[in-house]
Image (cartoon, rainbow, N blue to C red; front, top):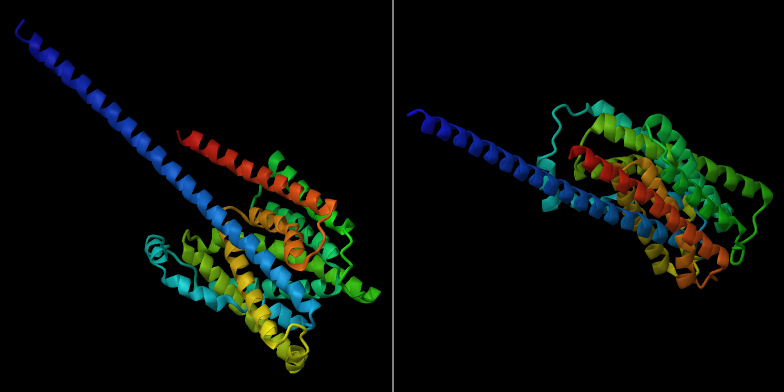
Length: 371
């Protein structure tokens, strides 16, 4: 009978331990849920910022590129090099305090060799240089509606390459997004944008068509390979990986395009071109400078979206920007806003929402799996 109180105390102490363990597990679960939610909010914030950079940079650079050609610019190599030469403006981002703290916590144990990195950046830079040149030729020889239509094909090319290189899965929402965005850009071919454009010979039209198709295929391939390099070679989850990809890739492309600019002899006529620019010399320089800035802002957004999501998502956002350009053209260049442009814009937004909703479902399923 004297041992009964001791046994009762032992039972009570064991129950208290079980209660403490359950409370601790519940607390840890709540903390992990809070951390997951914070990471999700941070991810969506980054996605919003990168999307804004991509759309704003692409729209500004495309409109200024059209302004360059319309007001007297005619150098294909100059229009090409301004798309990549602005990378030095990104170098100060290396010294941001937030970048330094994230960089110290994201150091890989086995970084790739210098030879591998050099080959990677050189190969991607070659694709970038070729794509920029082909796009410049296409924009010079094609009407803007036809150019936008062909550029939309980069989404199909990227989807094909992502299936082989990045194991991209096609869900009904993603397929719906791809179809809507492609139709959205395709509608622009039925819009008559010949006003303000000079007719070109049939041979040059064919050259512009072929160059734009080739550029779209090359851009889709470059996005898929960039994502593959992040996953298989760099294996870094830091802002430095994004900056390195943009700066080294653009450096290689700038070197190659510079060789082409001097080898072609177009550099000799740049002074005469600036003198004959319809808006004046200072406007000529400003247009080229802001084209360069716009494309670098676009690069941050595009590579950031590849890093945070996928190359296909980055291309979806880029395709969303194609029907946005006519809206800004209406505001700044007083182009008419027709019914086809309105329908194209609505379809693009619908396709964008469909793709974002698929990412929302993926995040919710992953959170449910963790719980």
